[in-house]
Image 1 (tube, rainbow, N blue to C red):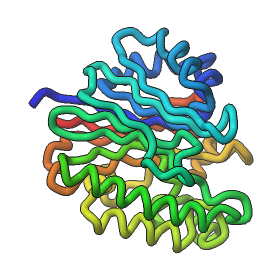
Image 2: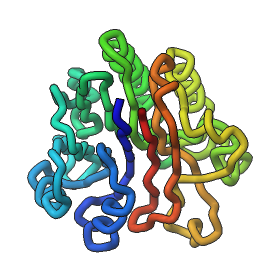
Image 3: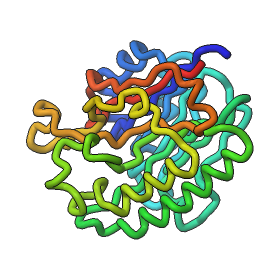
Image 4: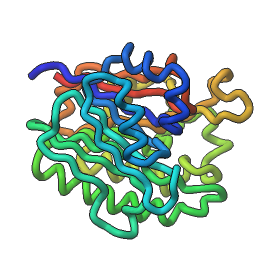
Length: 257
């Protein structure tokens, strides 16, 4: 099987990042499949920006509930055999959070998991969303292996967050409910491939814009590529590109072979 580089990046607004070094960064990383989260734009606006990157088919999903909110997209050199959007559950399909592309050997699912919100106001919604998302992934996994790419909005372990004690059960993304959800997903048959390959390395993918967090490296690892257990042997490389700027997140990726 040929090598395939898959990159995921929460761009925090595709029109905003396009004014920075986004195009040069994408060209330098040179992904075969690029999954974007928080595009914060309509499908036509995402396609308009993506036209500046040669050689990719573009599949975008935008929020129906709030304009300029959430949103996901897959840019892919190889034409997928099929592309679908959302989970087919009205209560959880209003914010443009999922694009799934089917290829001959696997599915790629680009996802932006809901944030638990200020004061954890959306924690229950997010927990239920997670439960349905896991069912959806397992349904896909019955057909062929799944590569999950995206902002999962959870620091899974203490090593994945700069200040675990200060944030535990207080901050969105590091509550026991969210950690338990990640544990269940991994136990259901998925692998956190970056952590598998870098068991003791401290590296983050998100930094709050406040308090110069990125300069101080006070970060969180909340962006992941997960792979079906049976397909993990095909992951030859995994990387967190924390030298890429333009968003409060950096790209994360793998190479399959």
